[in-house]
Amino acid sequence: MKKYEIDILAVQETKQKGQEIITLDGYTLFNSGGENRRLGVGFLLRNEFKEKVVDFEPISERVCRLRLRGKYRKISLLNVHAPTEDKGPIVKSEFYEELVKVVERTCPYRR
Image (cartoon, rainbow, N blue to C red; front, side, top):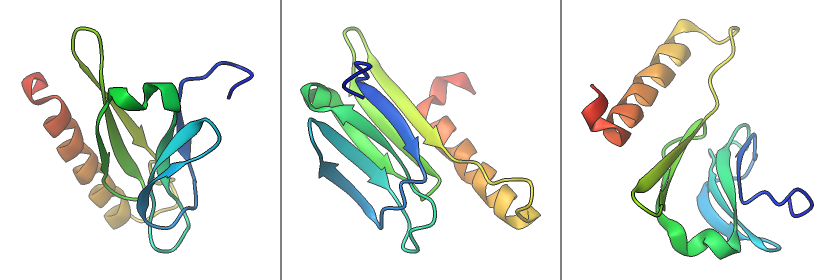
């Protein structure tokens, strides 16, 4: 990430247990993982931008939201790991119901 000067990176399949914030070499990992270490989503953020973080919401091992303070308004970033086609209809419908709730809560004026 340093080589390419990446400030924020959405990561999937972190395979980290639980929901936590970890400081790494020059970066901070905002992780939203499950108890089984199968999936996990999150954001890697360069430490210089850490003071811009307004909120990190770990929703599930498939969805998380990071809110940042921008120059004129707050910026919301969603990281979403959708289920594949081989998953059953119950898993898919639960995932999309959860995603709709997150999007509506993030952008209430867009309904």
